[in-house]
Length: 162
Ligand code: GDP
Image (cartoon, rainbow, N blue to C red):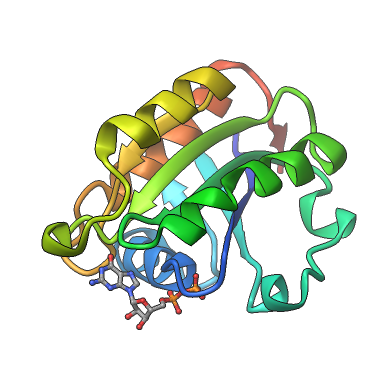
């Protein structure tokens, strides 16, 4: 029995969404582009492919998604300030039971940090999101971020058989 989950990765331009996916996919993806988490759970992970620059991420992008990563860059206060806007999008378009993880990316750039860890975590707690700081560069928490969301979806019993 296989479960297939759709998961989306959102956040402002240049926060590292593509690099996070690339890093995760190196370890996890099969030739058919689906991640295999253990043997039973497959994920289709969607990247905005630059549409966010034009605010052109539409309801179709979110449709059927059971999980999301909202990514900001810990060296960019502006990218963190946009997180509420991404949450608004999710609440407008996405399934209300969606599992959402807030990822403060580029945590390898500690000397340039603009968003304290505690501030990221507070926002996540206030909004009911999971939280991790990640680095696509040195792989910190990348696998954990994706797998945590997929696990939560799995244990909530959502998903469909393929
Ligand atoms: P996207 O527009 O959100 O998909 O961002 P990209 O994945 O294209 O990354 C934007 C830039 O940030 C690129 O130059 C990446 O190499 C860099 N980058 C992404 N993730 C990290 C990270 O974890 N650490 C560092 N130092 N740079 C990163």
